[in-house]
Amino acid sequence: MDKPLILVSNDDGITSRGIRVLVDIMKDLGDVVVVAPDSPQSGMGHAITIGNTLRLSEEELFQDVVAYKSSGTPADCVKLAKHYVLKDRKPDLVVSGINHGSNTSISVLYSGTMSAAIEGAIEGLPSIGFSLCDYSTKADFSHVEDFVKSIAEQVLYNGIPKGVALNVNFPPKRNEPIKGIKICRQARAKWQEDFDERYDPNGQKYFWMAGNFVNFDKGEDNDEWAIANNFVSVVPCQFDLTAHHAISQINNDWDWEQLKNL
Amino acid sequence: MDKPLILVSNDDGITSRGIRVLVDIMKDLGDVVVVAPDSPQSGMGHAITIGNTLRLSEEELFQDVVAYKSSGTPADCVKLAKHYVLKDRKPDLVVSGINHGSNTSISVLYSGTMSAAIEGAIEGLPSIGFSLCDYSTKADFSHVEDFVKSIAEQVLYNGIPKGVALNVNFPPKRNEPIKGIKICRQARAKWQEDFDERYDPNGQKYFWMAGNFVNFDKGEDNDEWAIANNFVSVVPCQFDLTAHHAISQINNDWDWEQLKNL
Image (cartoon, rainbow over all chains, first blue to last red; front, side):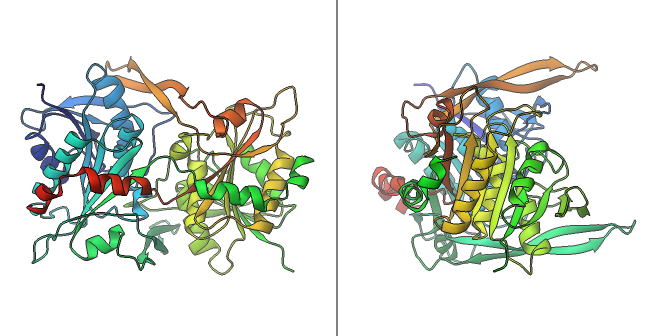
């Protein structure tokens, strides 16, 4: 049997430590091809490059692995991989990361790591985004390697429900070992922004976005709880954003007599 | 009673025709404040500015309306509005658009227009993204103005279910009048990319992303059907991406004996 083909991308850029760790783990599971941004793209959300050109070039950055860097976003990289680099051989798995920093809760929306995984799911490919809840560029990944490999194996052998990508977050390295894996829902939490107002050398105002993460969720079935309690969180994420429950409510609430006369 | 406060943003930039139309309609409904990108940001998805600075400056671009342009993304603009420009008066409504081009189906993920609306919903504000399915910069908006006003009024008077933003798309101007409004789900469709490979004057390869929109959906309850049949589509969108139905399936499918021994 052929070895599975695994596409690796990320949002911290092709030279980040997290993607090197991920490539090394995936080499044990199959043939690996990397298509990743040429520079950090954190917070890029599901941005794609419209109205501008894209660059793509092969680079010898990983041993025994074909790798391409692109000027595009993480979502662009997966599109380039599927429809250009790998147009003759469909990947069996798309993995993104390992991100240097948390992508739990609402951060899934802002995450370039997860946009690569969700783009894979849109293409009908089993896809996983991996993030370590430690923002340090020198973060220790040693405690998560076995989990990354085993979760990828579960997905290779069992598949993923259609239209779903997995958002996997790992707790930072602590004194005790990770307690296990929880399949979670996205926690109800948000960033509470604060804009730090400054003046440049020309006297012009500018801002840094800052702020705190605020968790409103009291449940124990969500990703924030899992990470706080030293579990790996796995949230199945979908790209159908329809709030199906709201359709009947809006149909009932609105004044259709008025709207019919437009 | 005070007039409602309405925040207007978009992704085509503060000088686009679509935002001028939207501002003029909203002035009939309340006090309007504009915070919008200083340049086009189509396809920005839910990108935010991390690791870089933001500019914000007041501009006299609209009559009797306070307006700010920002170097940030649509999501940044809503954050700047909520936590800086309007920190002392909470908006009663956030509207984004009117986008020059469709944001139906999967395009909601790539849409800067909708990221502004979804950011409003994350902030707990009733929020609507408006898009006209006509990409022309000179598109005719005259057939949608009454609909924009009436939908905004419905939302101001009835609210929106919590955690939901509306994705409103209008058909292009056709020979017959718009037939009405349908509350829809997001159609199952995707972009089938094709990369147009070229060489720059220095002989270096570059790409343009191109491709076709492919609609797989046979239903009549979705936004693509509504637009094709000359209805206004309204899709309630949520920012909880959890595929709740997939949680039990993954819990059943995975080999937990193996995963427990990690």
